[in-house]
Length: 260
Ligand code: URA
Image (tube, rainbow, N blue to C red; front, side, top):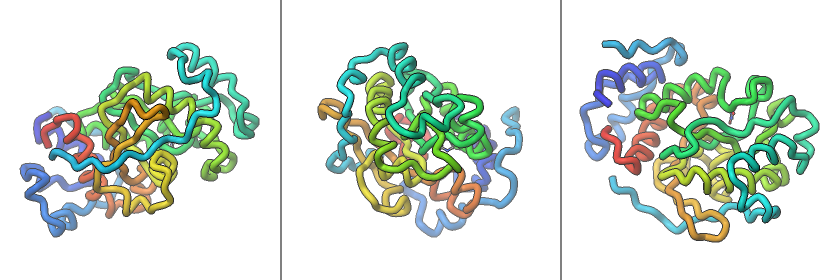
């Protein structure tokens, strides 16, 4: 992607992209600070007219309690999720939010849980945070339709609370199977819940972001590079961290071989 276009998307994210010509290696911590996000609306319409990462030891996903899910194809998985009653979240949902996008995507984005709008529309990240996520993906040269987007849980928690451990565990076999089927080259975990559940840690996002992790699926045969970044809803509240998020996105892009 040319820098002019990327710059337009970064401005839409709320980042002043005056250092785009620099390689990540040339960008000093001071420069990160200078890249600090411009305040202002992040969902404005975008006018686009005009590292070899160190990979540490893998974490493993929670073991799937339901072996039957492990061999499912997309259709069976979709149907099973739509009728799922494995946890109490099923009682409050309008519909399940399975996930959307390219089922052979190179990049998979994993968030936390559907919110009210997602529950109503059956699609992840369609609210205001979703608008920012779309702009983040565009800045990466990965339009929404070219990535696969899913959540740790497929049903909306009441009052938009965080999903609890049992709910995430009940849903884990579905997400594991989605990751296996998509077979992404890299996963972007957005926000604390996604990062902590996937990496089985209670470390803060601020400590997990900025470096490469590796996810090992149950069975251990497949390992997927994983990058953690801030949740777009958090970035809407804390725009000064958008420059750090952009560093994370560039790290994920490095796996995809994307020019930055
Ligand atoms: N936040 C998430 O983590 N996922 C969604 O689908 C929407 C908002």
